[in-house]
Length: 315
Image (cartoon, rainbow, N blue to C red; front, side):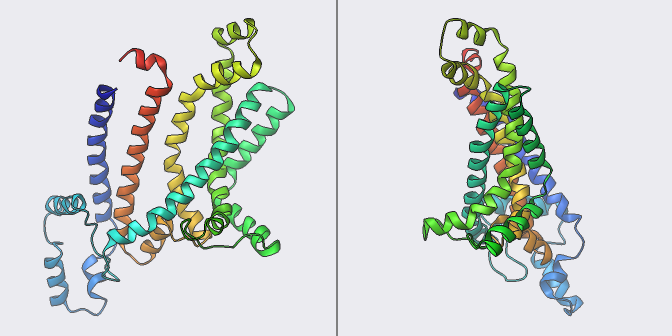
């Protein structure tokens, strides 16, 4: 297990280095001069020159990169050009919000997607299978922002069951937290649930055709035991793949979802930072998102090792 994990970590390290280089390089292509943003539109050329010298904007890009990544390792993500506040504490305040929303959306997708995918596979070609397929295609096709607006109009404006926006921390008011993330988690989790349905159905159909499943049925085992122990457990590997790789989709969807529901998470922070030309904040969130995505892939490899007996036997 340790050797397997060490190999995956060795692969993740150069990946993280490449991500950091790409994130840093892309910022250099963005329009505008950071020195002008810091100094203001009416700053004199002398002031702009002093700012460029103070912040190291005149250094070669390679030197700027190593200064930037060195600060990151020390936990320093820079300072907001507009408010002069450290970006690190701002991100730490937003992370619990986005994690709470993402966890709720992922839970929704698993609870809805996996059972419906299994039922569709068991009823292949029947009405239930067609209904689940239509539902899955609809979930993938519907834009997040449109679904969010429709839910707000129905449950917040018309029925007045749920708040139209905002976020309540779970530690302050658990019920209020659930109410505030109910609609956003459904919006964010719908596309994930649809993809989960399709992958679960495909994996289960493949497993149900295997010889060991037919052997288990011929031995007289209960259908529930055959489905759960022999079919579903062996179909977990592709499902784990989807659940972890969909993390990137979750982050991308959170940008629009948090904006629609005015949730003060990382997604809304990115949008606000773009509008305010706070490129350092965008850079920091993008880098952290890349690190989180690599970590989720590493978690997927560990779960593969746990779920696949053949992989454990070969180590």
